[in-house]
Length: 332
Image (cartoon, rainbow, N blue to C red; front, side, top):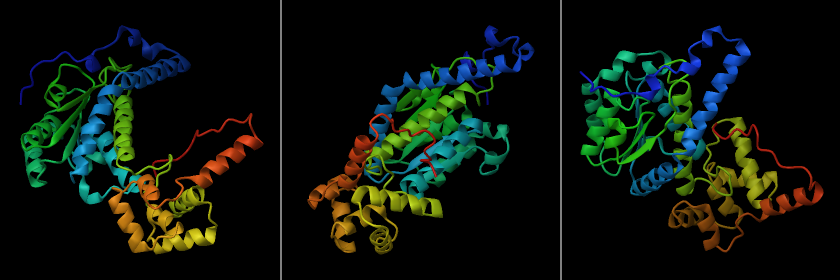
C-alpha cells in the first residue's frame, strides 16, 4: 500500500544531535533529558484539545459506549498500557474496554512492525467487535499515517463511533480525519526516527491525562481518592481500608465489616458506614450516577469530614512541613 509523502518532523535528523555518539555520557543524558522535558511541554500546548476530547468521551460513555484503544508498535503498546490500567485503578468494566494493537498479543512482547500495514485486519477487527455509536476510539500513531491505525479510525468513524486521533506530526490523516485531534508537536528525536523517545513520552502523558480526566468526570474519583479501586491484592486491600478511614474516620473493625458487606466496593462501604443498608446504598449510588459526593449529599452525610479534620491536625501540628506526594503509586 503506497502512502502519500508527508514531511514528518519525527523522522527528521536534527543537527543538534549529529555528533551525539561522540559526546561524553553525561552530555548525552542531559540532551536526552532535555528532549523528555520538551515532550511534556508539547502536551501542555495540547491541554485545550485534550479537555474537549475528554468532554466528548464522557458524553459517549454515559450513553453506555466502550473505550477502544488502537495503535501499532510503540504507540500501540502505550495505548494498550493506558487502557489496561483503567480496570484496577478505576474499576472500569472489562466488557467496555477494547485494546486493538497491530499484530495482536504477540506485538506486546516483541516488535511486529510489518503488522502496521495490515489494513484488512483493521477493518475486520472493527467489524468483528461491532464498534459503532456510542463507542469511543482513541487512535495513536506518532507518524499520523500508520495504515492499521488509520484504517481502524476510518472504519470506526464510518460506523458512528467518536474518534480521537493522537499524533506527533501535524497535517497527517489521523489528525485531519479524527473527530477530536490531539497534535503533540515533539519535533525531531535525539536518535532520528526513534519515536519511543520524545514522541512516546508525549503520547504516554497525553493518554494518562485524557483517561484520568474522563474517569474523574465519571465519578470514579472522590476527594482525590480512587474510590472505585479493585482490591485484587493485599496492597490494594489496604488502600481500600485507608480510603475508608480517611473518608469516615471509622476503626478497622467497622471498616472491614463494611467492605465485606459491600463486596469490596469502597463507595458502597462509605454509605453503609453512614447507615445505609446494602440495597439502599446501591440504589442511592445508582440515582447519583455513581458519584459518591452526590450520593452522600442525598442522604445528608458529610462528604469528607474525617479527612478534613486530619488535614487540619497536620496543619496545626507541623505548619512548616509541606505535604509531599512524590512517589505515590496511583496506577496499580
